[in-house]
Amino acid sequence: MTRRGHGEGTIAKRADGRWVGAVSLQDGKRKWFYAKTRRDVQEKLIAALRDKHQGLPLALGPRQTLGQFLAHWLQAVAQPKLRPRTLARYRELIMIHIIPTLGKRPLQKIAPQDLQHLYAAKLRDNLSPRTVGHIHRLLHHALQHAVRWNLVARNVCDLVDPPRVAKQEIQVLSSEHAKMLLAAAQGNPLEALYVLALTTGMRQGELFGLKWQDLDLAAATVQVRRSLARLKGRGFVELEPKTARSRRSILLTPLAVSALRRHRSRQLEARLQASSDWEDLDLVFCNALGRPLEPTNVARRSFRPLLERAGLPRIRFHDLRHSAATLLLSLGTHPKIVQEMLGHSQIALTMDTYSHAMPTMQADAVARLGELLAGTT
Image 1 (cartoon, rainbow, N blue to C red):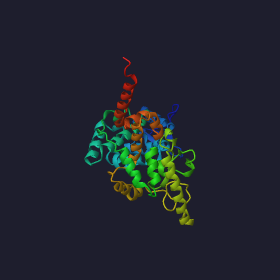
Image 2 (tube, one colour; image 1 turned 45 degrees about the vertical axis):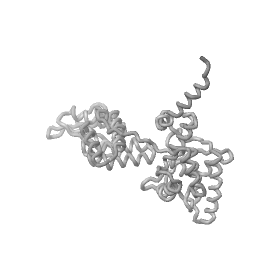
Image 3 (cartoon, one colour; image 1 turned 90 degrees about the horizontal axis):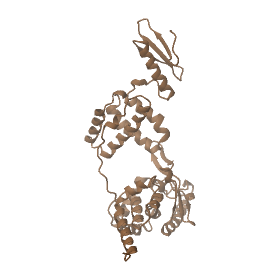
Image 4 (tube, one colour; image 1 turned 90 degrees about the vertical axis):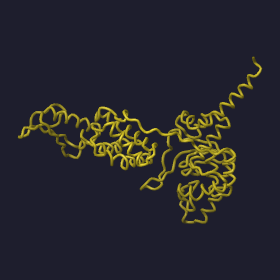
C-alpha cells in the first residue's frame, strides 16, 4: 500500500497497473473502488466518504440506480417525516408506477425525456392526471435531495411539465338539502356522526378517531386530537392530526350536543348487550363491539342508503365537510373562523377551496356597504 492523503481512504496500485481504493463500512467490511489512475480512485473515495458522512449507503455509490436511490430516500428521508398513510402512498407510487419503468436506469442518466415518457405511458394506462401529478411531485421532492447531496447536477423534474389537472367542482349540500339529510338521519345509529360532520366540518378520520374524553358536552366543545386510519398490513392506527392547526377546539351547536347525548345513551345500551365482548376504546363512533368503524362499511351500509332515503344525489362523506364550510361562509362567517374550524394550515387554502361561496359573500357585503353609505353624497 502506498501512502495515502488525508481523508482519501486506502489507495494502492495493483500488479496489473490499475489503482484500487477502499473505504471501511459500518459493519467492518470494505467498499472497493477501481480506476486506471490514482486521481480517479481518489475522486471516487472522496465521493464515497461524503456519502458516508451524509448517511448514504456506500454500497450504492455514485452509480446507483433511480430505484436504489428512491428506496434509500424513502427509508432515510421520507419515513421519519411523513405520516404513515402518506408514506404508504409514496411507497405505492414508487413500487407500482416508477420502478417498473425507470427503476434500473442510472440516477445520473435520468433525462427529461425519461420522465415525459413515464407520464405519457401512465396516462395511456388510464392513470388519472392527478395521480401522475402526484408522481411528478414525489420525484421532484426526492431528486431535490439528490441535488443537495451532489449525486446529480440538476433536478430534471424542473424541465418537465406534469399533465394539466382540471379543477374539480366540489359537491356541497345546500341548506335545504342539509336539513333533508338530517331529517332522514333521525333515529339512525350514526345520526350524531352526520350531525357532527355537517356542523363542525371535521374530517372523516378525525370523527372516527373521536373519543368521549375529547368531548365536553356541558361546555359544548370538542377537541380534535387524533385521526384514525386503516393502513395496509397494520390495521387501524391512531395518527397525529394532519397539520399543526388540525389540533384544534371546535364549539358544538345545540343540535350536535343533543345528538351526542342520545348517541351516548344508545352506546351504553349496546355495551350492556355486548357484555364481556365489548372492547373499551372510548370511541364515540364504533361498531356493536366497541371497535373502530370501517369507512367502506359506513359508506355502503349507512351513508349511501341515507342519501337515497333523503332523495339526495350521491356524494362522498368528505363532501359533508365541504358542505359545512360552504354553509358557514354563506352565513357571512369570516373565512379565518372557517379556517380554524376546518384545521386548514393556511387561510389561502380555505379561500381557494371555497371560492365558489365568495361571490355571494361579496354581493352581500357590497349591498350592506351601499345601505350604510346611502344618502351621504
